[in-house]
Length: 381
Image (cartoon, rainbow, N blue to C red):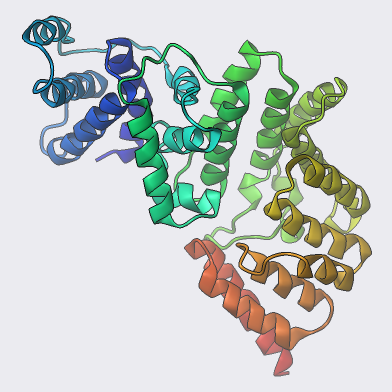
C-alpha cells in the first residue's frame, strides 16, 4: 500500500467533492472513509486509476451519509451527477482548499488546525505538538471546527495570513517530523507567491528555501541528527540559499517587516557564515529582538536565549532562559547546552538525559541521549 500516493491524492479528491456541492465537513468524512476502504481493498486489487477510484467511492460515501436527511429529488440529482469510473480531472485544488478551510466563520487557530488535519495530512498528535497543547484538546478543537463549517457554503475564502500559518506548520512538520511534507509546502508557497504580491508570502518562501537547503546535512548516513554547528556546509544547497536570499532581500526592501521575513533573515545569517565560528550571533540576537516584538512567542524567546548565549556568553543565555517557563518544549535541552558551554558538565549531562525522555521523536531522543553519554564519559576520565 502506497501511503504517500493516498496522501498526495487526498486534496484533489476533496476538492472535487466540494466543487460538486458537498459541504466541507461531509466531504472530508467521505474522503477519509474512501481512504480506509482503499487501505483494505488495494493490496489485493489495486485500481488502474487510483484517483478516479477514490472519487467514486468518496462520492458514494457522501451520498450514503446524506441519504437519510436529503429529499428524494435532491438524492436523484446527486445520483445523476455521480462521476463515471475512470480517469479523474488532473486539477490541483490543494492551495484553493487551504483558502477555503481558512473560512471567516472559524477562528484562525481553528482554521489552521482543520486544514492541517483535512488537507495537510498531519495527524492530530502532530498538530497538537505544533500548537503546544494536549492531543485531546486539539481533537476537540478540530471537531468543533468541522461542526462549525458543516453545511457552510465555501464561497468566502479566508485570509492570506491564516494560509501562511498553515503552510509554515506543514513545512515544519515535514522538515523535522514523521511525514515528508516540506517539498509540498514549498511547492504550494511558490504557487501563492506567483499569484499574490505580498512581502510575507515572499518571506515564508525564502525561509523555507533557506532551511530546506540544509536538509541533506541535517542527518548522518546512520540517521543520527547532526547539529547546525557540526554540519558539513559543503552539502548545503547553494542554489536554494542564493534564491532564498534574493527573495528575502526583495521583500525586506519593501519595508513591511513581518515574522516570516525576520525568521528568514536569521536563517540567511546562518547560511552566510562559512563556518559555525564565523556566525554573526550579535546580528542574529537583533533579529530575534525584532521577532519577539512581532510575535511575543515563547518559542522565539527560547531560541533567542540560545543566540544570547552565543553572542554574550552562556551565563547571559542562562539568565535569558530563566525568565521562561521550564515546561516549554526543548527548554531542558537548551538549558543542558548552555550549562555545557558554561563548563558545568554534571548538570548538563543530567539535563540532556531529562530532555531525551521528553523528546518528541526518536531521532531527537537518540541525539540527546548520546549527548548525555558523551558528557558522562568525559567526567569519568
